[in-house]
Image (cartoon, rainbow over all chains, first blue to last red; front, side):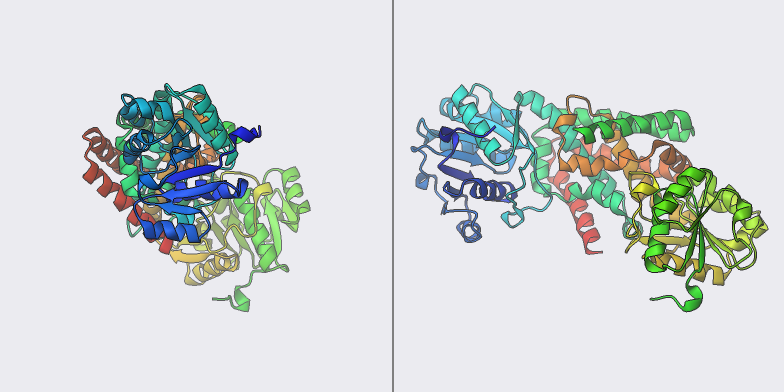
Length: 287
Length: 287
């Protein structure tokens, strides 16, 4: 599914050059070396470091410096609580050939915050590439971060050609694109991403100086996501509150069932539950 | 910390040649090719396959075939519920130069079950190498499985020279040996191993056909342990019941705290809890 020449972006603005923004830039540079990649952020010195690393062609700290009236694609890779404001600000200055997408891991909050802004609604197509890592900063970015990763695109009232263009963009840096409504997206990630984070945090917090030296690879792998940036995760969890709470409630019910079966020493029923989890895990492997 | 010549084993019996037993055999062969490794189990055909793979020098299905009156080291790598019976049976046939260890991931249950057996008490030194994987069978074994892994040795009333010899054995295949009482061991692994398994199971069980296609590497890593053999894990969890229940209770309290802070949208306190988990994870990395 290669993109047509009209779908190859010639100028991309990356707003927020951290792990995700840096990886978007790196991936773009590796698949499309003629694309002009502009990093946009508050910290000129940090942007300049990213430019020196070869991730960016140019840096900007004021929106007036951005070529938003040309044919530009903007990817907002900020923490979720800052995405909507950035989209609104940049959309207000954008011409009809500019399209804006994002990489935020919650979508309802963002879509709702731009719903009453006519220019933002026209220019914006939300997206969430399911990729990341617990080590923040563009120093940890990789051109391979999005390779074969699913990117959920959540078109709300966006124009079809903008949806096509944004989808082609995410595909061009390696993603498999899937469409979903913002609400459905948030329900899915509450279970697949936000819940595992909370479970890893809880498992980590009950450890002590006595237990930590005796953790093996199982513990390490199952809880490493708890090392993710606490400020970013606070905003993600609060940005998807009702669905995160629902996911936590369901999981507490499962833990209560497991507790009860262990308390009763009910080997056959406990084994059945564990086996059900094995089956789901095997099914995942086949995907 | 290399072993003295007297500590180099010349004959090792591996009881139960699965992932762990197969990896013990493979590691032995790689560090000490002159050691005679005998696989002992019920299934002659499976043992013969392991022999053909080069893991074993000989196979036996009846204890009478084992050189237990010579200077032999026996490693019992059976599922936890079968370890004590195997130790008792083999100890009864063993001479004074034979020593028996195991690789069981619970220890109080095993130590209690042999406490009133004079010959087993004399011959046995319990151990738990903290290594493994969710793919069972000697086909998945690796000579590197124990490399730099912690092995907890739990001497109860064992003779000092047997404790030394068993420790030297685990060290010889790559482990860092640490002593601990059986009760302390079980308390530690309830938190570091049995709890993460249950958390991964619960997280897996609340997923659905709708959510599974959208899981990323975070989900995969944090829940893959839930693919571990359901029958083995049932026995491990029930073999460490009081401590597993205690670990689950503590963790439910943490989840309740997280739930409450998200419900109240208390960003500062939520961030504090997430940050505490980040600190523990960072500390682990430094180990």
